Image (cartoon, rainbow, N blue to C red):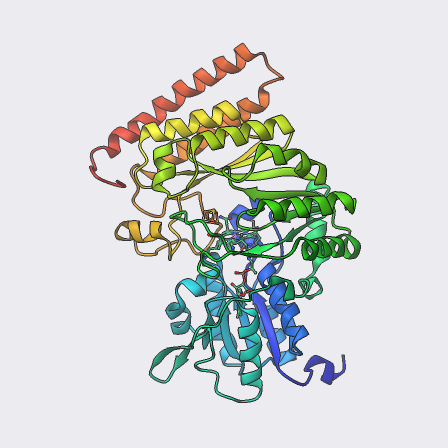
Length: 478
Ligand code: B12
Ligand code: SF4
């Protein structure tokens, strides 16, 4: 390539996704790979504003060498790294490695937004804690033009006497101003091919909104907080068409924190999908209080295949402690309606949240047994920095505050009511029940019931001693 194309004139930004799939034990079990929509949108916006952009996506790499090579070749003014708690260590190692090569290092995304001081101390020059698009353009121009960038609106930068926070910048009011994600910056075929081989569908992620107005105590929302903005249904339809036409996408995951918060909006989108005969299948994450059974028929007609439902617990007391804002009768109503409509349901369940007793756990298990969802995930509560839950258990966090490697949810990271081994047994119990659920219809109901009873007896024999052992530690987790 001609040198002027390798280093185009004007500001140059190298974006980095430091996630390496092969290092994530969860990823090996459940293939769930999508490129970061945050970075793709940032890339598209920067380009539209005349900033040169490259993206190094480490997802399919073995290590970070590609980043160093890209810095040498592209000579960016700024290296911008996306951060999650899971990838924090790698992000910080990269910043330290890249700074010696000259560019200004900038961190953005949920983890840097939660603990900017750590990122500044570990090699980043600037943290962008909020919405990245206008701020990154502003930073890139200032740096390329050798103007001061400490104090740029919506940034926290390392100044001579410590961290300097710039004035705040309002959120984008109209999300329709954002261009379509710059899919061409990553190897889309690699993602789509992986999905096609494992599921037969070419799957892509789409985001229709930013933020969530609810306030669950374990949920980390450092970037968009409790604001909520959504794209117009017409803009969403344009993105769906582009994915279908350019990449032969057949299945879409709507990645919104909560999909279809506004009913009129959802109705318009569904109508558009049906009228345009897009023929896409889709899945989304819904809240049981918002997903109304009477909408399910049109959702089905528009292509709905699967709904992720944040059930979390079968105990109303626990839902209230989590500040979830949902009622058990809503969970039951939604689960029954999804089953009747033939929509697959994926339940998220959480064990070990402070205040949970053996009875609450049993209530969760019995709810699971009653509805037997097609898919589920039972995680052990993870206190993510910046959440009320994290604050609450902070004194009971051993040394490191949360995991940095692996996707999480399978280990106990704080001193909870019961020992980790107990929760692991509980997780196995759900696994066994799920297997029995699948056997229903193939084995006689009497056999399934008998197996269920035997499993219960076995579980109580193994798990009970772990509980007794723990009761010698009064007050834990309450
Ligand atoms: C979609 C999604 C997924 C998808 C796709 C992930 C992907 N590749 O993007 C799936 C289901 C696979 C997934 C998996 C996981 N996820 Co997830 N996910 C989300 C979700 C709902 C939306 C992400 C998104 O696209 N946001 C929209 C974009 C526009 O926002 P954004 O990425 O934050 O980017 C903006 C700003 O942050 C900023 N920005 C971001 N990067 C950068 C970089 C620079 C340089 C700058 C300047 C700015 C900047 O600008 C962007 C545009 O304004 C978020 C919640 C949320 N609302 O963000 C959780 C979230 C990011 N996920 C989270 C977690 C914990 C996980 C898992 C670890 C879960 C698990 N146990 O397996 C895994 C990690 C796997 C991975 N590959 O990293 C947490 C992260 C918390 C944390 N502090 O790290 C979040 C915040 C959810 C939560 N509330 O706890 N996830
Ligand atoms: S868990 Fe879901 S509904 Fe609750 S605050 Fe977070 S994003 Fe919103």
